[in-house]
Length: 106
Image 1 (cartoon, helix red, strand yellow):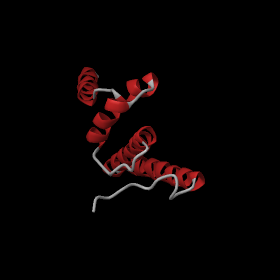
Image 2 (cartoon, rainbow, N blue to C red):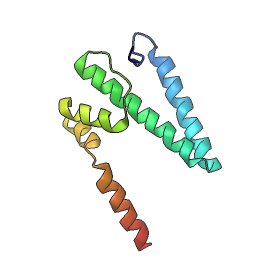
Image 3 (tube, rainbow, N blue to C red):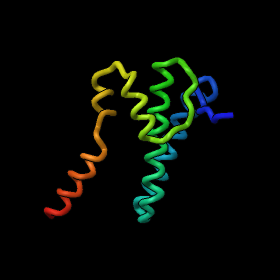
Image 4 (tube, rainbow, N blue to C red):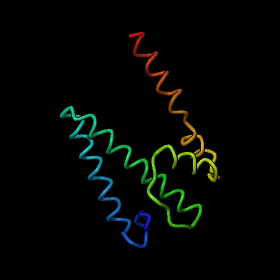
């Protein structure tokens, strides 16, 4: 049976907020301690959660857990808000290449 994420019917808004806040606190601790892999996975999980939430909001269907790239692609097919679409439509490969070029200059 495929895994399905929690919905607003499973968790209250306050509980969801507390979970996100605790995750951000843990992210900050991880960065301060030099645990960058942990920090990266925490941020990726939060981004995936938000993408899954938006997809569920637009489709009114249960959303299955998926990779960041697949969630991005799925959301780009159905996103109706131009501002959110622009945020999601970031080409990560171009962004990473630009960061690499910028780092080589310094």
